[in-house]
Amino acid sequence: MADLVRRQVAVITTPNNATAIAAKAATATVPIVFVVGDDPVQLGLVASLARPGGNATGTNILVEEVVAKRLRLLHDLVPKAARIAVLVNPANASSAAATLRGVQEAAPTIGLQIQILQATTIGEIDAVFATFAAGHPDALFVAPDTFFTSRRLQLATLTARDRIPATYAVRDFVDVGGLMSYGTDIVC
Image 1 (cartoon, rainbow, N blue to C red):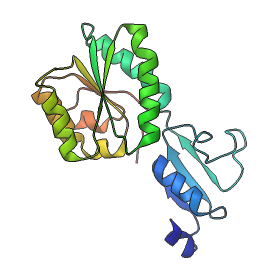
Image 2 (cartoon, rainbow, N blue to C red):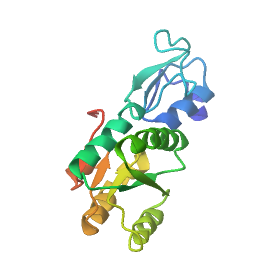
Image 3 (cartoon, rainbow, N blue to C red):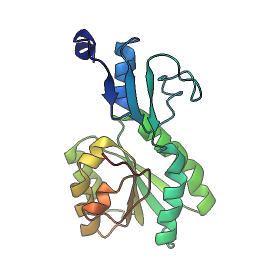
Image 4 (cartoon, helix red, strand yellow):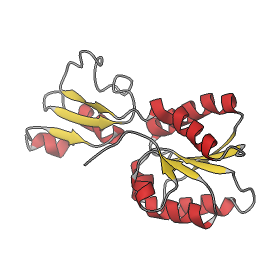
């Protein structure tokens, strides 16, 4: 981001929380247009939704707001599911925290037990699925995360292989064989 500011670009666009936060930290003058999955006020990007102020504006794709709905849809699809594994990327702290907060609030209301799993690398995703041999969850809830989206084929393949119903935040997973998604429709 510092390099972009030095080059005096006209505008900086960012596709996720981390790059939006980095852009905001790098400049108070270059306009920033962001797409984030969490509340931009809580992320420190804008002063308020009504009056953002400063040099940043953008779109919130409502990731946190639909976590409970995704969990309920997964339960509706697999009504006998009682144990749900939740896969988060701890390197994406804001998304992981928002997902866990939403899941932990919603799960008891529909009688679900949650197992939290973490992955930040391709190998860690494989390791998560290897643990399922010892204790197979009834379903999988994959947190919204750009790394997971980049590994959508791996995740869809592993869930199909292990016959684990799974829900994702974006349609890209379904396009490669994932079971279901629910979230903001993002057309790029």
